Image 1: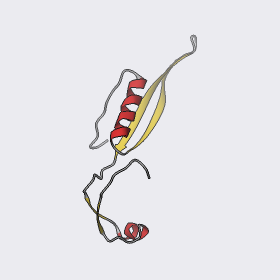
Image 2: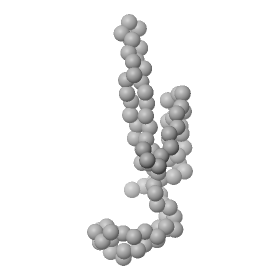
Image 3: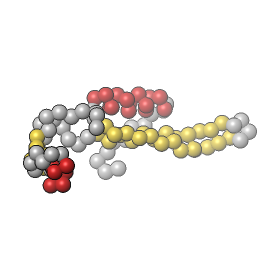
Image 4: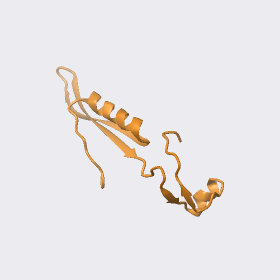
Amino acid sequence: MDHGIDFFFGNRSHGVKFVEFVGKVAPVRSRNDKQLVSHDTRSNNYNYKYTFSVEISPICREDLICLPPRVAVGLGNPGPLVICTKVTNTS
């Protein structure tokens, strides 16, 4: 993706721990996928490739935000310009 960083881990559990770490230090939205790479029918072994995607919130504390009119009305009409005082992981 544009403006992104790729990390590669030799072990799925290391990737899961990294995603958990990023989720603890910043508000994120994440998803994971699993894709079959190969399958040995004789030994019934499956090899998967795991992909984790993490999107970090682009808004930080003390940012000046210009709200679209429709969003401002939906939030109780605080005005078109607001200052972010807190960023959390909750919706």
